Length: 329
Image (tube, rainbow, N blue to C red; front, side, top):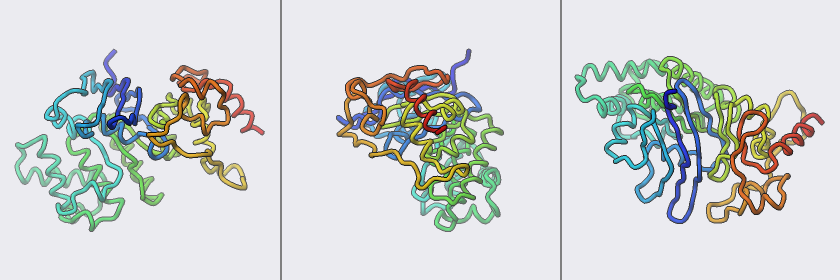
């Protein structure tokens, strides 16, 4: 069998003495979407920056990151620069701070193209930039290409970011919270655009999000991250229909539902631990209603469960039975 498009194994990231991500394993296949879900501060974005080779030199990154079977960790920046934008690209969370405010849209698009293709004539560059704006359905591209980021709406800026990411037809596209701060109508348009581009280009897509609804709609597989570790991973239908980790269940239970009337929304008690005060044993045990003494002493491994997914919980099968009983009550 051919190697996965992206395969991450045992990825561990540390800022000095602070370990922010530990033993993360992920994979993305051609034309498939992996959703990475978790609260703010759980390590999602720093994991993607490590995959792209964009973390500062003083950050210690270990494990394995393979693109089409080629190891990326340890490669020089010149080699990674040749890959970024060409074979793998990233849409950053905030287009207003990611786009250069003193360069026009056209200049930023042509810069992205020229990095990997310096032989194109100026006229061809202009046509390619206009084609990219049309690809992402920006109206009046001949006008927009001359404008600056501050002259565009939030939705248009995000489309420009997507156009830049698509400039060199990458095999892997990483989207970090691509609908943040956009209204729901524009959010839907952006997600439809990403799905269309993925289908047309047969790309692998990694979607970082805290929006379980979006992930459930478009992802093939999902990984739930908590405090720097993957706590549940598997096919999206298996994980969402039968969550085996209490954290996954809590996230799903907190979603508003139109088929049920409640007095107040469900919330997971407590908050994400800081990097310096992470608990011993299971990282989720201070917030978990199923926690026992073993949870406070031993960190659980990501093990197969009955739904076909994997969960890092000492009581994964017991907890899910209790959750189903509660849901049917």
